Length: 402
Ligand SMILES: [Zn+2]
Image (cartoon, rainbow, N blue to C red; front, side, top):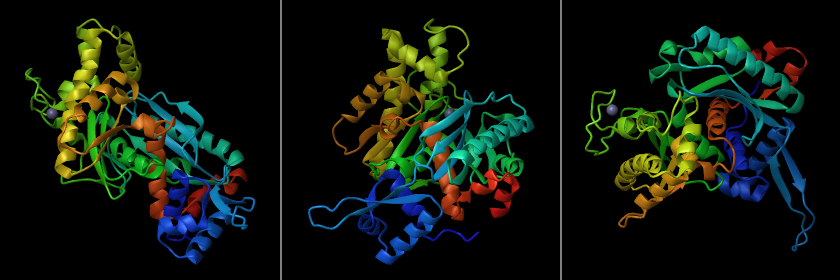
């Protein structure tokens, strides 16, 4: 198949963030000529990905034509794998969930078994997708550990010790015949903000506070990797507590040791605020926040303050005016978010905090992270995959097309 024209990915991104756009507006935003915009729109309309609407004549007497993503056009299979929760979802082009399936996967799952479980679920959702959509952007995997988009492999560090070095994206591609790609969750979230956030954030620093703590900056619409290329490094910045808490990295008082949700979980247990084995970190954070107990709130706000103080230092240093907070701590605790607001209220800087759960407008950050990996693949290969071949029972044709 011919690759899409060079402007097709950025046009798709623009329509994902803002639907119902005129040709003129697209021309201005994409900084390309009118004929180029028209050619790209025609190309994507022929594939069933876009549709145009001519509205009634306006005040100036000329009917306006707007372009939008077709509701039955493009779809994505989104695979989200985290230490405590794994899902495979069918999403529309804007990342709204059509069908979501939980997977019985965890750190202890055998790798070959995991490939089979994910692959089966992806194939079942592709059958649903073929009945409802024209094309597939790809299968995007957001992984809660280190992963390499270029090689499609899981790297180190990662909680999934038994999967290290395994080329998960390539193995899934082989299993399903579908185009697959993988990236680390924090990097994928940066991609999701750049692809799906309608407010089009300026350069920003993203903090993800989950089981571990990640931090990545985004410069010019791309994750800025720095020297170490590891979002987890932010979790190993000293957080200046007096406790001298040993970290698994060998240091003391790292954010990972003092302020991760894993630590909050342990301390809540030690203080008798939570009992039993924690299955779902989101549930734990929500219940601590809802209890409004002094000890519970101080666990959440103490962690949030330490994370926010270090994030603010980075924003000041890099001159970033936007700092985005995500992960279960900030997605599920209003008290933690309020603590962040309080830290950023300090004078002498121009950085403002924002929260993922607000920016994504009700859509799941996990799903959008995985979807952004599929869009990254689409942008790299400049391909969408017609689902008609799949409908006709020729699943393997998809692979030949890729
Ligand atoms: Zn550490």
